[in-house]
Length: 222
Image 1 (cartoon, rainbow, N blue to C red):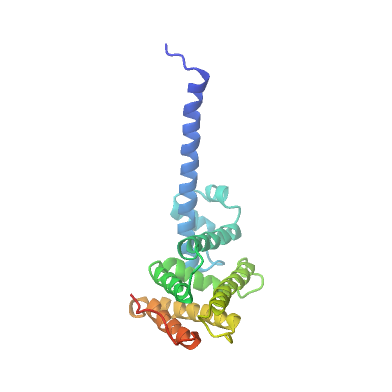
Image 2: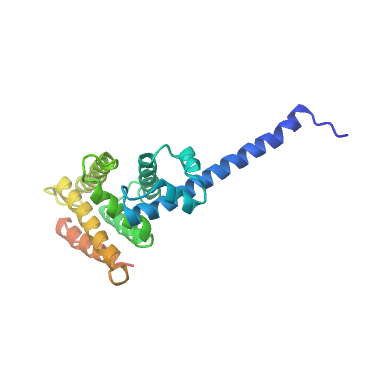
């Protein structure tokens, strides 16, 4: 008979625990992915936890083990998506206004490659205009943060002398956010025939030429 000492006996339990956590993380990620498609297709109010759980391949009780409610799932989906975008496109401070604008175009290009998430954003942003919508406060805070971040980048460019000293950074930042979302909405209606990143690049190029001290714009859209 093989006798395991106490340290040896712990190893299988640790391995099992790690495996359990990995399965839990994978399932949570799968729930978020499926929820994106459901919120994109039906919006928040018409989406059903039971249908989401069925498409994931678990029970509704199993879904609620990871997310306390449909509201919790919605906010988690939105936060998860934002965290991925920030890590991918805005983790480093842009060195120039050109770099900042190119990052925005890169994000639009990425959005055109994930139609489910982009449609979800369009649907939920429109729904969240209702004061009682569970994502209302999230979108208020998000737009405030987005406009603030872009405005801060523009102010830094003004200080470096790239942009004219009379640049209204808050106004320009708000317009950039509005134009990007508007182009995204038009793209979602006819994605096969609408070049969203190309249109955004053209707008930002014209905008930058109107703001830069030397009239320079963005490099050609690659």
